[in-house]
Amino acid sequence: MHMPSITAGYLAILALLYAVLALQVIRLRRSNQAAFNDGGNIALRSAIRAHGNFMEYVPIISLMVAMIEMAGTTPLRIHLLMGALLLSRLLHPLGMYAVTNSRLFWICRGGSIVVTIGLLVTCAVNILSRVIAGTMPQ
Figure 1: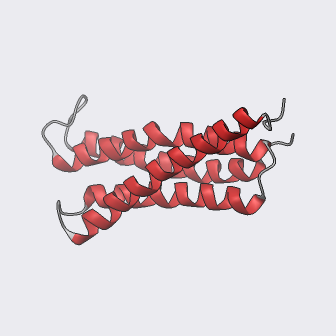
Figure 2: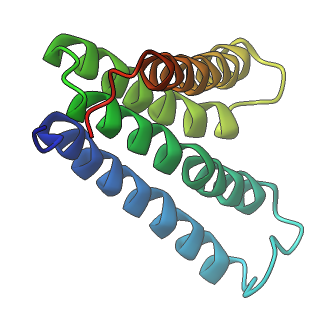
């Protein structure tokens, strides 16, 4: 078993994106004087949800990809999984700031939803199939 270095590299990039999302929430909270909740500000509400959505999906998907990497999956597959996660996490905030029901809104939000849920299911099925087959490293 080896360290999941490919996953770690992507996680570093994702952490920087998470910092940007957090700073956006902080900036909007300060400019709108909204210490709690969104103060009725739509831009702040979008920033809070983009930040929260990131935190809801990135940890579990990254953890599963790290396990898949440690199980010996090819580097290409790990790059594809983590690259797709990075893409979905870049698309989601763009969709959150787009005009509701616009083309950009549907492409970015819809695309991020499809990719994220697809990754969640793909990684879970991959791990479960390895566990059932007894091929997960001990």
